[in-house]
Length: 255
Image 1 (cartoon, one colour):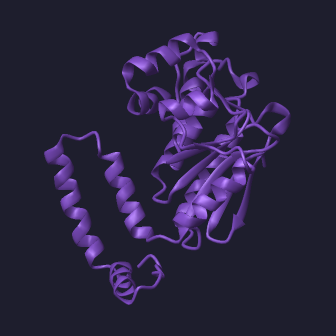
Image 2: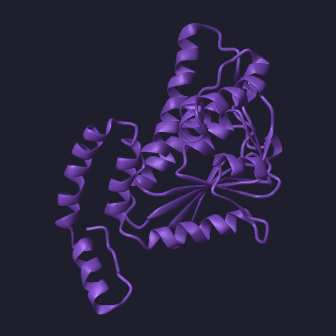
């Protein structure tokens, strides 16, 4: 397998592991990533996930040696597996951190954008290079970029195909932080560990609300109206109240 799974307490670390190809992902890896995120979603011992790449790079996109599908049916299969992979990352109810260093381009950048947050090393470089092969960006990249930086800036990034360094990515709000004092993976794991101590059900519900944030306000408030009453009935909510009153740290168990 070219995708590695390690666990650090309640934090799972998923590593794209093809360093000789800057972690360009194959068809097989699409299934491996989707299956891994599906399993982690169901694992109650995992409360946060870090996604990273091996060998000093995050991901150089889809492996071009597998491109050039022989017919439309084959290409549609490629797209279904790609979307299944992206959905598996986006839909997990657990916080997902991308730890990015080196190359993060094409659909590799789409994978990072599918995570909840991105932390980057100073040498991280981002680009949408699809135009070089006569393609539009895929794997949800345009949808993500337009939400993060607005349609006009997203168009400039896509049409130009230029490289964005870590400093500009931070300025544009495309990453959460630049980690220049320690390895980016260590920083992402620490952040994920902090999040893993939080209330899993509340995190999951908050994630659903973030996904609904593009709705008109009235529709969003209707969605919010269903969330708080459910959380009010949880053991985690009771524990949070008791901990606050006792001035101690809460111990959430996801129930």
